[in-house]
Image (cartoon, rainbow over all chains, first blue to last red; front, top):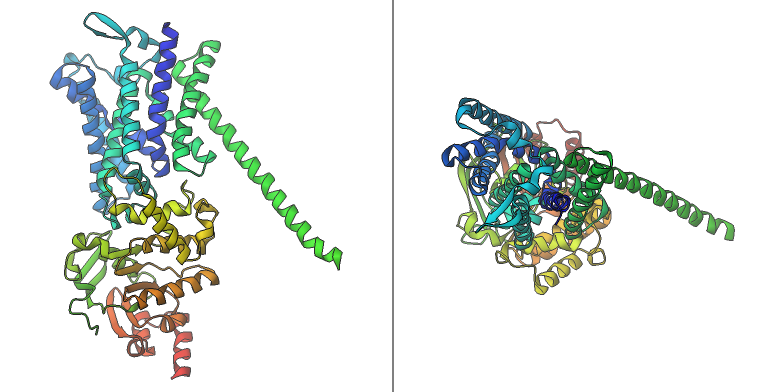
Amino acid sequence: MSPDMWVLLTGILAAVACGVIGSFLVLRQNAMLGDAISHSVLPGLVIAFLITSSRGVVPMIVGAAVMGIATAYLTEVLDRTRNVYRDGALGIVFTFMFAVGVILIAIYADQIDLDQDCVLYGEIAYTPWDVAVVGGKSLGPRAVWILGGVLLANLAFIFSFYKQLKICSFDPAMARAVGLNERLWHYLLMTMVSLTVVAAFESVGAILVVAMLIVPGATAYLLTHRLSVMLVLSGVIGAASAIGGFFAASAIDASISGAMAVVSGLILAIVMITTILVRRISAKRHVRASRENETAPVQSM
Amino acid sequence: MGTAAVAPIEVHDLTVAYRKKPVLWDIDFDLPEGALIGLVGPNGAGKSTLIKAIMGLLPVLSGYVRIYGQPLEKQRELVGYVPQRETVDWDFPVDALDVVTMGRYGRMGLFARPSKRDKEIAMACLDKVGMADYATRQISQLSGGQQQRVFLARALTQDASIYLMDEPFAGVDAATEAAIITLLKDLKSKQKTVVVVHHDLNTAEEYFDYIMLLNMRLVKFGPTAEVFTPENLRITYGGKLQLLSQAAEKIARQG
């Protein structure tokens, strides 16, 4: 496969992995949580690096998962003190954790081959040259394997625990009332979001991750009344954004991740405008129909 | 009070705080079995808070709740819950049958999907509230009253012994009001215990066997005829409410 095709595949995998799991953030009206987690994983990555002195997949993913759960847990604890409101609690926790990460990097700067840029702003164009090598054989870009794995994990998670995710997103109080451990499911979802964010960050960069967590889900939400259809659509829209962005970027020689994010935004805009127009037209038709219904009996009299 | 040896719900010295402010103080009662109980009081009296505290949805400062003598965790299947309609996002991409089926989720295995039987039960419960024709409607396309009936149907799928309903009559149409009343009578005939948070003093007397007057503390609880008096209402509402004088007049006229 040509390097270009690997870049495209990486973009698609990242967009679909973020899109499906991010749909649940959209449904919970919790879109900022993706942004928050994408910041608060930083100390996890630094600490994992300090302990293992490697930027390998496993320490990074463990570090991110721990911090993702910590973000969700600390937000919950602050919220439960009832001294701050929920979004306030989230704002406090993620800025605090991001700051800790920045300070850790500053303190250990001489031992760390890790700066904000390389943690937070991966560059998708370089992914084809960072290949996974097993037994002397090249297996293709590392990013494709990691993102492919995360996508499969997300799909398995959603497929296995569909009903729990559904009821906890729609009506958390009812979920608890029927005896489900709503908090546990919340934490598990946050863990999956954290894993996805950190896996995608490294290869495709922050802009694309934050966009793909929310925009495909938000677009799909406008297009359907069924949760299962919404999840499939969010994946399709994510993939379409990646493909469209890839070709747009090569046409105008711009940042690939940036172009993918822009295309997803354009798709959302088109869908939103169309939805509004369709609603207006059907409302007008409805009014006209009811007017005709009203006049009909008058004429017959 | 009731004839049951063990009360369906026993609340003992319950105090609940919300955002640091105590909302309920020293609430203490035993509910009789098989009765329709109206929970009445002014805004901010803690009616919803009491329901949520019984359901274990709020942290409790002191005291405890027992369901047929046991903690809630052991008796969840015996308690059906109808939350306030405004607590959820009605644009959520699910249809009426999906929402009703959620009442069965607590009984399914970790990986299990709703079975054919679960769906049949959900459908039968939708039918009971007159909503069978709307099973595949997306929930945002239902009227407020229809949404309320979907919530009631969901609680019915729990096949519980006790039902806690948070303002089911709030902002509903006449058809829904009639459907709820039929449902309450049906539940009573099956010896179910039903607690209903209720706002309308004009109908409270007619709908419920027992009335609980609440205003942060338990003002009075007992059979409607004994409790629903102008004096007790004045104590509960502090003479603030215009509705109160209307209700008082009505009672006086009847008396």
